[in-house]
Length: 343
Ligand code: FES
Image (cartoon, rainbow, N blue to C red; front, side):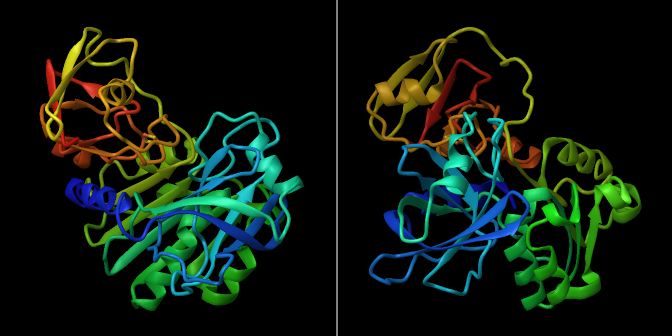
């Protein structure tokens, strides 16, 4: 994926095919130790907006919290969405795309209180982790990070691609969809429970860099860091990761104010070190959607017309950052005195 395709995704995410709707929990099922899946349908039985592998939705719970969860069902089923939610009682991030430094309320609510027949607010779907066409894929999942990869392997199989999945988890019983995957795809799926087989042997599994192969990884931060290190010699476009939580960021490039011009409205605002670009442009009247406000969900993606953003998100790959054509104003700032945004 290149930067321009990210912008295209973002533009589509604010337009047609997006929900800001109430859906019904039509089924709730235990799919692994500490993991439940939810099936969501429209109360009227209407079809739902189309989505592609790697997409996520916003789940707005009756208690008022909003979380992002990857869609892990059948993308060709136009009437249902499926997500899987890991219980995180200790107040940690609950799943891929889970968006807040939470108090444990989001995933605990889903596990303990949400019932079939309940209604939940849903936004999206959006996709900042799209599956790029390729003849060969290596998929690497850690724990609940299997969710965005599940529809990807189905797609790769449908398209006749050469693919393999390396799936690690604490124990077999904690690994959601393990049996479904091994039953459907047999030896293409390599299941590695840590208590039986230890950590994933990434160096052996990835082997030497292959320019014809795309690597997709989702899982906890240490796994992503290990995969990034193991792919250091691969072409820059080869690896695509999706994070549970915001990655570590260096200090901002500048600690002095800068200007942001909102080209469409003609307003210019000064962004001081103590406010985000998102906050500053909203004060100027810009209507920018946001969710996580931590640079992980991709909701606030904004096209950049001029200037060089100080990218501080956990969504864009390095080559996408270098394109300088979009930014996430909830966390990203400016390298120079001025940015011009398509707002
Ligand atoms: S609101 Fe989530 S990336 Fe900005």
